[in-house]
Image (cartoon, rainbow, N blue to C red):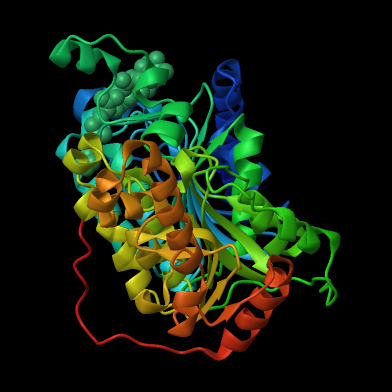
Amino acid sequence: MFGENGWYHPTTADRIADLAGRQDEAIRLAEKRAADRQHAKGKLTARERIDQLVDPGSFTELDVFARHRTTDFGMDSHRPYGDGVVTGEATVDGRQVCLFSQDFTVFGGSMGEVFGEKVLKVMDLAMKLGCPIIGINDSGGARIQEGVVSLAYYAELGRRNAHASGVIPQISMILGPCAGGAVYSPAMTDFTVMVDDTSHMYVTGPEVVNAVTGQRVTHAELGGAQTNSEVSGNAHYRAADEPDAIEWVQTLLGYLPQNNMEPAPVYGFHHDTELTATDLALDKLVPDSPNQGYDMYEVVRAVLDDGDFTEIHAGFARNMICAFGRVEGRTVGVVANQPTVSAGVIDIDASEKAARFVRFCDAFDIPIVTLVDVPGYMPGMDQERGGIIRRGAKLIYSYAEATVPMVTVVVRKAYGGGYAVMGSKHLGADVNIAWPTAEIAVMGAQGAVQILHRREIAGAPEHEREAVRRKLTDAYQQWQATPYVAAERGYVDMVIPPSRTRLQVARALRSLRSKKQTLPAKKHGNIPL
Ligand code: HXC
């Protein structure tokens, strides 16, 4: 490398060897060090995670040699390549994605200036290419040594998340700590996955909670996968381990378009034109007693190709089901009340869960199939004080704003506000179907009779009161709690035997493929937040 005069004069072979040495240091040696530390904690390294997620050999890494420029706190003595984040592009099932994967073994995967530059660059690339961005989070948050600079990059990241929202799908995997303001970028993305035991997400950790409030809580109680997927709803999927999380993301991507201008992928399917055993089972699904539940998943499975679906927020607000599936090979979003959980009532959590899902589907041109069995909005002090008015309004707003094809099936109860909000004709659904078991009314028979006929019942001799109540309830049930009052007015387009649901939903979606609807031009709406 050095000539006779001692000057630096590398040959081409020297330069290539030098590159190989740098690559060895940046990738092989760094990976070895990272593997030792991460595996000991039951975690994969940043690159192993990417390798498992993407098609073999498809990953092109960017900015391998990027290094921080900080001199404070003795940082200039340690300038590892990559700066704690691996970024690049790859394919998943042959479809392009951009990724960043935080490397906890380098400065705790914390966000510094160069780290931030790399993440923003790959997000900008995803926007240019029009492909999903997947962020793999495992980080101590803002890099303390870099101070306000790291905060600036979080804000820049939040701006990118907002601008990308509704343009490209954004997916966050939380595979380690994610604390402080660092939680807000994943929260702004469309889907967040957490892993049992190894991932945590909270604004302030247990020590701060204890110092400020005196409460003693564990990391898991405060922000583990279960807490975030079942209680707070910050996580859309709770994975048993990292491979489970990775597989879920791969499956999810298969339902999604690359961006808001492209259709979701279409898969082959076998369309039974005759009624199947699953179809026929629907004729016996709804129990004779209105107080008895049944499992709405039976209807979901019957409507979707191969009965296959991927649920979003499966453990959160289980009274509302949100899932991606396919009808005739094309992605649909299913929104359904679940009568086995709190009778399928809409509470704050259910409203927000479904509203966000409806908005995602609408932004990415995914038709919505709504299955209705809802007694209405949840009454109660907690709900009213918690803001069910403005938070329940999100669901109405979301449906009203949606312009994608919408098909609604009223299976049983569609009472009060529940009727109006769950994909009613009046909010913009295109095809509204009812089963003969549908009860479309302001409220259930018992409640209605109690209000309408209170005096009449009270005025009856005591020994006859129950019989009078019964007679009035039966009359209401017979004349009001049916699909036919709504059908007379065209609020439902057809009443069909349950067994024909799959065929009718498929037919409706087929005919709606050419639907084009636009709303008045505006800067943006003001959804109640
Ligand atoms: C620099 C950090 C770091 C950070 C961790 N490290 N967090 N370096 N900045 N924020 C380094 C540690 O010094 C250590 O380096 C290595 O990463 C591993 O950290 P440990 O503490 O040994 O790991 P562990 O015991 O697993 O604990 C993980 C942790 C803890 C719970 C995340 O490290 C922690 O509490 N970190 C600080 C979290 C935090 O408060 N971040 C700021 C949040 S505010 P060595 O060299 O010893 O291996 C924020 C604002 C964002 O993020 C604003 C957005 C708008």
